[in-house]
Length: 167
Image (tube, rainbow, N blue to C red; front, side, top):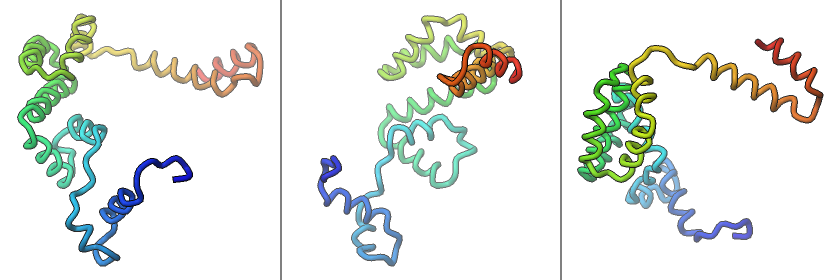
């Protein structure tokens, strides 16, 4: 508590008991507790990974998540369809997908659709064309890295030499 932790010692104890392996102190009490809840980041990770790449426990967790509420199941299906469009470069399906998302009334995906429609031509190009700007982005990233490493240590002439040498 002296370091700023505002919750009780009991909540810390409950979390630790959940983590104890069988055969340790209070293992019977820990077995009765529910598992640690899934964070939104972990759920997002499960939604975005390819289903065939998930391990057995991850597939079980995903299945449990999908059965919690029909809206979660629908959101998973929509996310999976969009990910498939990205992987297979089938941007011609974008309009149908956008209509499905609008009909779903899932608030979080509605904002995503609004962002897509702001620059729809670029999104369609990204979903259909094989060209990308990955090489240019890589050079920009390398330039920024060198610049950060050199910050405050030398003048422009040395920075220029390091950049030219790196390329």
